[in-house]
Length: 546
Image (cartoon, rainbow, N blue to C red):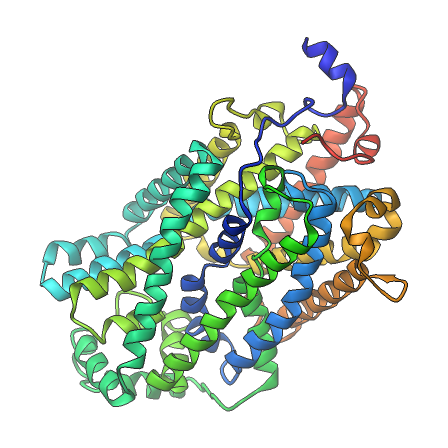
């Protein structure tokens, strides 16, 4: 039976074993949660100004959101033309088959190693530092419970961090393994409601306090951490200014913020990796709106909450506390990062409001981890179907309809392996250039969009995207060009503007080392499969089975 199947198809088998169960509304929620409104606000309004003082966050979000609409339309056209599991890999490898070593090697590098494995560790760090530790700390602070305060401190120790990485990865992978229907319609919807409740709670607290009230309450909260400075609010600003921080408006800093914002807002198309399990996945109009709404919905809340937090705390303070916490950490003595939830939490002593604000951010962070496991496990499945990754990674559990082996690989390599490096050797900074790897990936997708009508004419003519034209020019080419050029600008910003790029040379080494591994692995498998009578060039000439 196995030999007959091999004779019929060069692919791993004739069907994936996955089932189309995902509704459009859940695909939209998946995109919003992939962006993660809570964590997006957390980093954008503290780390963002710290890295790019003087930049306008409002302008950066507004301008880049418009650019991202073209990225959304690019992914909707490419995804609905080739609605398969591992969507991004499938359309990059097929359209760019003439540069397959890069197209495939980049996918192995960025989406399997970075997103699938390394982020098992980094997402665990994020869950510990921006979700769990603040939640427990404020509960302990509010109830004077020393045990909770001790747990918050323990979560930042190497063993505590490693255990949280393992636990968060095991939870996310376990939930995903149960099946996509349960994940989408039960787990994800619940976390979305909790996350949006956090957003509205933060908006309420910001809207019912003024700056004088915030300064007073922040100074009271910070007193144990700055015992010699009763006015910690102004002390933080003055300390940052002593390092030369200047918040005067700068277009260069605003451009840098766009590169930063891109890391938060670019993920609304996340469901494209699961297009082999999505209903009506060839409906271009439907998924164009799903992806665009997935970008604009969180962008709107980021702008509103951002306007509130700047009016409440002041841009000078947000820039200063972010700079001290992330750039000059020896001067920052508060035990949790200065995210928007800290700003909100000092405004209330209500234990339920504190749980909602900090527990809600934990929900956003946890969803980010599970979304990675769900999407990129399907990309591993697609690579296995194309005979690039081992066959075992393409196995799908018949009862759960999940690629369990791919998920187990993420846990072992990502949570256990990379988690140990991050927790015990403190190598988080070595993985800090993820945005550079991200830029390379979207450059590749932009190029694929520009070449799609010309490289894969039959697939293009059969796709709904063929009907979208401006004059005689296919619209997908325009969307690909805008995406490609915008990513080139971000790449230039990243490598040419001081303070925007990576300060740790290990991080660049990791990025290019992982890319080199992906390309070398592709060549090795190409020659290995050729010896088995499988030619990747012929294989990339057709779409994989559904």
